[in-house]
Length: 307
Image (cartoon, helix red, strand yellow):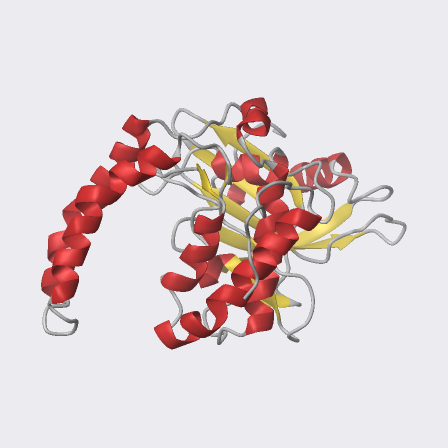
């Protein structure tokens, strides 16, 4: 049972919960006597809150609530990247900006997985309603730099079978996005300056070649998150403290290895108003570079000038 992927709440039993909590050393003595389950909303998975009730002699960290995320074998199913995110890629990284994973299991045929993780909802929330500030942006930059530095450049990436994208992988990535260009331009016609149409056409024509050219220099490449949207950034409710990054779920066409700074750009360009971004982007970028340096990356700051 411990190796089975949980796809339905009916599979959650006392035996399973005790086994995984004892196995993760969250429960050292005693046991879970009972538990309740509460469903939560999610776009690409089923998520439930589990509230264990422990025996009086129980010891350990004994989490009061747990989140169980279940991704099933549907069109929205992703590969094993998220399981690896919590259980392999950063498991030996101290102070990693990820919730604790107590148990995770992936099965390939059909693709499905579950992750039993720490519930941070009492202290943190997704950042959809958070107005960008310098402190917030720098906090996310520090968290990303911690993750990026751990797999910085091709020599480290080889340890998990990752590599700088090939030209065919880059072309596949661009090909997935390209069909959306004309419908997007049609949708915003009259809302943007007409000159943007030719600019965006040029981007799709020439930028893929520049992306391929950039791969000839390995500096700056790492394992990226790829979807640093506000929902995947858990910020402290009280405004102070650690930022957590969740839900690394790339599609089969995604670039999972790319320039680390692309995660910083994604965080700001897609979700922030232009005036906010223009005011904050340079100091946040400086914080990101400084955090990379403090996490052991060398050489990447060469030629960088403050101004």
